[in-house]
Image (cartoon, rainbow, N blue to C red; front, side, top):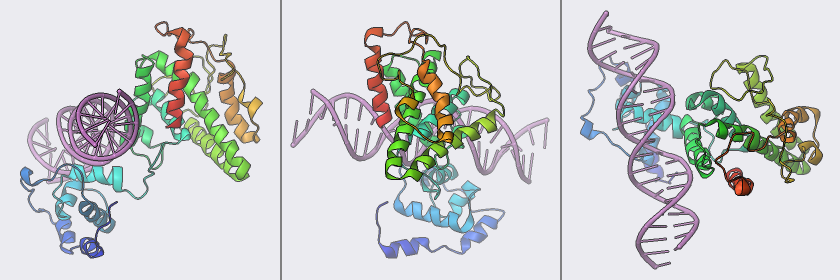
Length: 296
DNA sequence: AAAGCCCTCAACCGCCAGATG
DNA sequence: GCATCTGGCGGTTGAGGGCTT
């Protein structure tokens, strides 16, 4: 946030007592002419006014709030600015691998229900998740010449990208453990905990199934289901089980075991029904794309 | 150096559902 | 039952910054 003069800040933070009366009044001041309303990027001053007003009076009744706070913005605009940018409990910055994993899984189940997905990612907004999906995930689907809503792409996510994300989480946890043993446990615990919560909340007794994800709320969690098990990648990239490379405590291992099933029994691209792909260069292409994605 | 392209994300829009009078 | 208001949601847009040529 840009710095502005302290005098300006204090004057902006000074709440006019009349605003209380404004909100309580049965007939708030009439809505300004539409031409009076500001649009576009919010200024620091507007942010301060909004933050200060909500701190004092709380959220809700956004149209009245906008009027009473003296903001020449629509109530909707104020609400959006607060929820997506100013709220103190927001997490900002890169989406972590754990969060990516959750987003992929939840999207496979619920589709574009961004707000619902966001509820499972504390501090993240639906807008942020939606943007992440559109800019990252859809981009890679496009690069793979895949429709993002196709079963093929869902299978790729489930059986290739998600296990790779888990591998990344485990690797991160292990490297952290070398410096701080507690960090590893915390990282893996948090990832595991998220999935445990998810399983409990959405499917009290998850059933292993070989069918792939569904958007229905009531459908069993598919996260742990192994794919069709015949051939697997043998290029050394994912042929090894995670356990061969790392070791961790029991709880972490339970989390990883579920995924290593997918690792050791990964199906071929043909099994995923991707006849249109250039199978010769696809593996290289895929991992290039995926590595870029993971590094973001 | 500059023009063009690409990517990200804040902000807006339209629609809908629920609440209220 | 109807009209209006309000909040929430998903889709879309466009400004701005970074990258490439």
